Image (cartoon, rainbow, N blue to C red):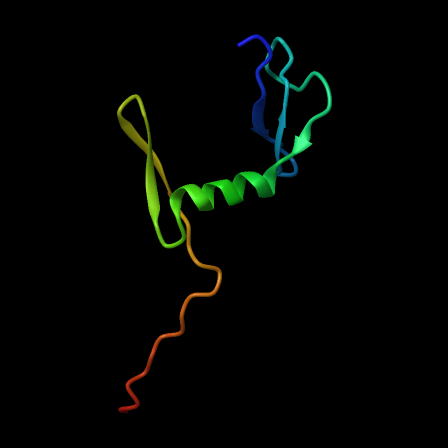
Length: 81
């Protein structure tokens, strides 16, 4: 692939950007695009709310990603005290 698009997290802001990398891979050649919300929504859609996945590299678990609902259901009370 001659002209790849990469994503990276900005160290100071924590935002996720997409663009074409320089030869050394340390920055972007041209305009970069803030894709933070798009990436997070794609992760939510991939994993599913209420689910989690374990991410592996070379067959070894590295970390887990869980997608939790923003407003969990309130606990029901039985009324008995």
